[in-house]
Image (cartoon, rainbow, N blue to C red):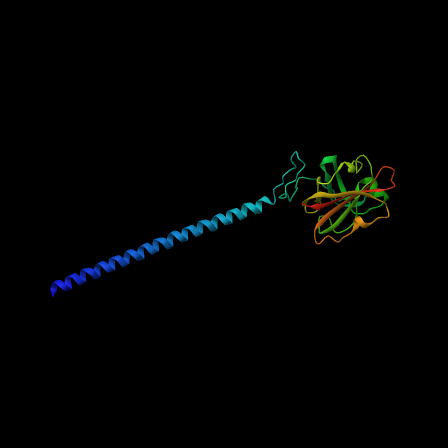
Length: 212
């Protein structure tokens, strides 16, 4: 009888030891899983932080005339509040043809002699068709005919220094009475229409671009 009790007690002790081992293994597994989840969370937070930081990095054009989509700010540019008594909205930069012009708020004879002007549309760099007009002068839009579909340029908002990149998707000439280029039905997208005269002034050259 004593022998039976002894063996039963031994078996119970073994069961308790095995049970403790199982619990210990489960605890170790839980701790490892928690550590892995915490590491993943920290990595995701770090990646998100780096991604947000990228939106404030200015990336200049490369030799193929392409512009980074991450470009959002252009802090170093100096844009005056007014020019010749006209409010300045921002700056138009067409690197391919060497144009960097302040965009004046109002289109009239005096403002057109000073630079390019807002002819029609929404606020600068906002959804809609922002139409810019400029004379066919050497320092203005004389070389606009050299811009082609696929070429890129950008516009900087004076107040926020936000830089928005655009790519030309259409180029054509039309009669001065054809105002279809001013259409504002853009489905919430940002567009820019560049307008100047063809040599002789009888027709208009139109370059239409979308945000990229």
